[in-house]
Amino acid sequence: MLYDLGVNDNLNFIDLFAGAGGLSEGFIRAGFNPIAHVEMNEDASKTLETRLAYHYLRMLGNLKPYYDYEKGKISRQEFLEVIPDEVKESVINETMSEMTLPLIFRKIDNMLNVDGQRKHVHLIVGGPPCQAYSLVGRARILKKENKERESDSRKTLYLLYARFLQHFNPDMFVFENVLGLNTVKDINGNLIYPQLKQSLEDAGYIVVKREQDAENFGVPQKRKRLIIIGWRNNTNHFYPDFPVTKNESLVKKILADLPIVSRGDSENKYRLPLCKSCSYVKDNQIREHREVLTLHEARKNSDKDVEIYKKVIRAWNKGERLRYDKLPKRLKSHKNQNGFLDRFKVVEGKWTACHTILAHLAKDGHYFIHPDIKQCRSITPREAARLQSFPDNYYFEGSRTSRFMQIGNAVPPMMAEIIANSIRNQFLL
Image 1 (spheres, rainbow, N blue to C red):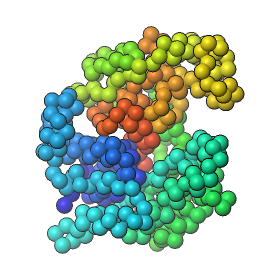
Image 2 (image 1 turned 30 degrees about the vertical axis):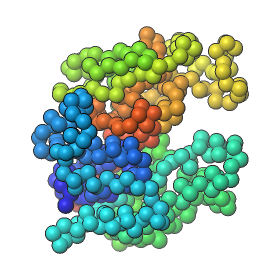
Image 3 (image 1 turned 135 degrees about the vertical axis):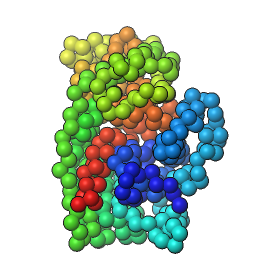
């Protein structure tokens, strides 16, 4: 059996297309118990495994092995030796397809069958990879005029989501995705969303779609997403009205206790003590007393990048966005002088919510320049994670590139927790 990590009510959920676990983190905090996570990316699966190990050790009141692992005092193998197999095996590193579905079902069924009884799945959460639905992703596809990519099989992964609903019959589901899902079409020119909705309804669910912005959930970031919620026919569940929560701390204050680092450098000691951290960091348990700082490592930005960054930061401090076409000719290296004119962008330090953190961070940091001109660099993985509302004790596995990808693709845990609490309240009625 899987050790129950939920707080009280043993409300069980399965996370599909789980990524690094931002959505799952919110539901665990709200008291839900994770039965299984299904994720195709190996690094993200390791991140999930590490995070579940953290929750298990925290439940036991012994986080020393976790801190030792973060500090590099013990290897990953040594760390995982203290974690039960049931916890580690709940992460299923598989690409979902018609071929792999029977195996995935069998693994989860085995997790649900405990002492001759079958645990009930109350909830399924997750959303297929958003790249095929995103406006930027589709623009690139069309630009290359590649019909094979246009018919990307990721667009029909929702059919597999419906298969999970049919097999496990949860009371509710939460499906998260980008706004582009509203307008994306299949290879025949038909809108995807009506087909998605029909497949979920055919599985026996009432389906409601609404646009939500992470900024309204206390996240220091403007991040609009579709949150689709469904519940089984003939039940009393409903789409909650989520309470509006606004962050009141400036973005630069949220990052202020992290050490100053120069391009290419890293630092693992906090700049300010916890007592001097801003209210957002303290009140939302982003940082705790025994916290170990990790992943605060800056890219090796080139001299030319730094010169551009300085110009962009100075312009932004005057209230202007410096367009690419306004840069001196010697600083321009892209052939396309007419598109992506905002390719250099400063994180809005004087605002309470910055622009959307994207997985594009994995390619370069030009769109996420630190607001402090003295540092003059792109943001670190830890800074990106904070702006996504991940706590500092959330460790992302893999290379820096992989970590940026995981962070940028994630659902902010703070947003997920409010969604989870609103749904949990329905099960307590």
